[in-house]
Amino acid sequence: MRVDYHVHLEEGPYTYRWLEKTYQNLLMGQSSLENKYSKQWVSNALQKLSERVTKGAYDSIWLDLYLENAIRKGIKEVGIVDHLYRFTECRTYFEKNMLLDDTPIGTLQKQWLDLVMTESMDHFAESITRNKEKWAKQGVRLKVGVEADYFEDREEDLSELLSKHHWDFINGSVHFINGWGFDNPKTIDEFEKYDVTALYEDFFRIVEKATRSGLFDFISHLDNIKVFGYRPHADRLLPMYKKVIKALKEMNTATEVNAGLYYRFPVKEMCPSEPFLDLLIEENIPLLLSSDAHFPEDLGAYINENIKMLYQKGVRQIATFEKRKRIMMPLSLK
Image 1: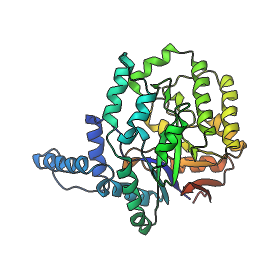
Image 2: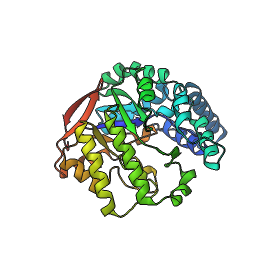
Image 3: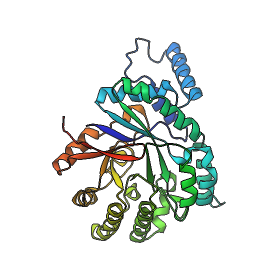
Image 4: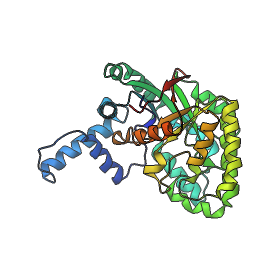
């Protein structure tokens, strides 16, 4: 069965590139006869973009594009999430844990947080839930989840935020080390300040703690610290991988095969890396499939390729979720 369990609807900052890609997606599947680059074409483009921006990413004008692409690609189950840092209700949580001081990186991250934290958790959860029946009538099961950033020793704060809604799943992720958002291209120079082995050890220690917190149904992009290609020698990574796998197994927690870094970031590699994935499979850690899409056109990205790859490695089941309960489904090449 084809599933995509880590799909986003939007994420700022809202740049000219974001406008361009949003407009391209609004036209997805349409065959326009209007004269491209005419005044009328510009007028129509502005009207479509204005409607999309005004109504937001949770409106059917945008959600329907994901549904249409799921149908085209034969995706039978879609898990839609939003980052916790998108929700205004979570501002205090991030202000406590991110580096937001007057240093250059703190100033940059404060500006970033203000740009992306524009949505309401209530609105998100209600909007996706409301569309479940509509999707089901089209043969696609829609699940609502949330991608929650884990910060050390903030489990109580995070648990309170996550308890506000009835999610189908909660995926935990690590995007910050010592308050630094390491996957922000504007902060890439920070990597040069660290011993890369020590940095990886710190990252995987946080991933292990996130897993052992028991807050999450699966852990996302297990080794996204590699996002810009900085990494220690493979021999040094092996013991780090094994500690995380031990935690996943003991906590009965799943993880995902995530295509996002492959097509959206410089490292151009799936998460987890193949040696890491082989160890996960060897220990029978439940796996999900995910595109980490942020636009409708990317839903299902590399799902077929990853199905074939997993099947060749002997995987015959894939994890799905409903009301926080894991359900293993057959993995098929058909």
